[in-house]
Length: 432
Image (cartoon, rainbow, N blue to C red; front, side, top):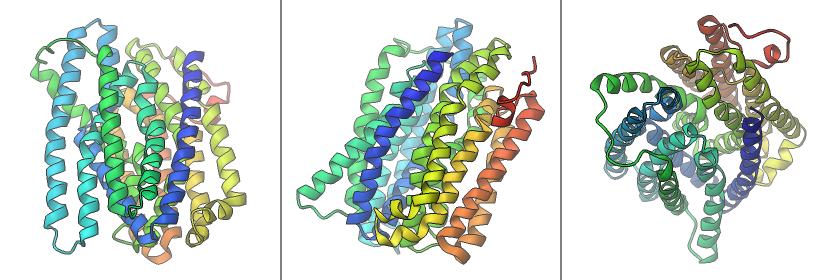
């Protein structure tokens, strides 16, 4: 167990390095691009991320649970069948999604040429986005956490920074479309690398045909979790897409910048929660609740410390931090504090959402995520036009608190388990 916590901490520290590169990249983009162009870059790359996740068809969310079950049962043939089906379905839906976005880029009548080019570049990144989601989950399920998380969260920021600096050094004008094309090339290279390195841990030879009954079970459990993953891991991208038609591009850029800065810190929470998922899945498969509280408690401290420190820092010096990106962003200090506080709330509530997935409460989890997305959409519709960037930040906070509170209540009612900091720091026992 201590090894899992160490892995979580090391991955989070590696992400700090990636966050540093990402931070510098955001500075370069904000200083080089006009605010409206930065807003376009955020919008199209968020679209690609969301579409890539949807095209993965929910398999990344269920892979840890089903692979843990089949491994404990010694059913290697079902492991092979699951991996083959996940990749096959993802490939099918990726082809459809990429074609639709490309068609929209060139057939939508009101788009300018730069917008068409940026959308084209984003569409071409959808296959790599989906591949990183599917193969990343397979790597995490086999406990190859570095291969699961580092390509997208640590290596990608460094490669993108290098590509952006190379474009600037070569004298090529940096635009939203050229930056998006650079990101697409980086994504494609990382997806190929991850696939190749994962091959030795995947079943060899031709995969057996999975019984149709099992395929139906996989699909029925995977599809509801698409919306869960959208809200849990792609919140920034979904929120950026929601505010894009409601705010000017420059304000969309400010919202995107605050979200991305907050989620650089929030990744410490995400990694800590995801690293314990296989252990939670194993304990659930053995019907042994005893280790669960210990796993959750050990995964609490690092993300809690990081988010407390980050929230305090932006509350004191947020205007100086934002000023690095440009004077037009300084006024977004309060929105940044609000969004950073949302990450602190995630750390305090613990991994209730992944645990809902582990215990098989996919439909409840999906219902909560749908409700939270509706709260986010309605809050943005009301608050963003009235209060701009601040309204968008308040909307994000309302949706986040609704989702965290509702997930904790449902988890307690369904399983009797709690993951919040108040509970874990108390002397209460986990129910048997």
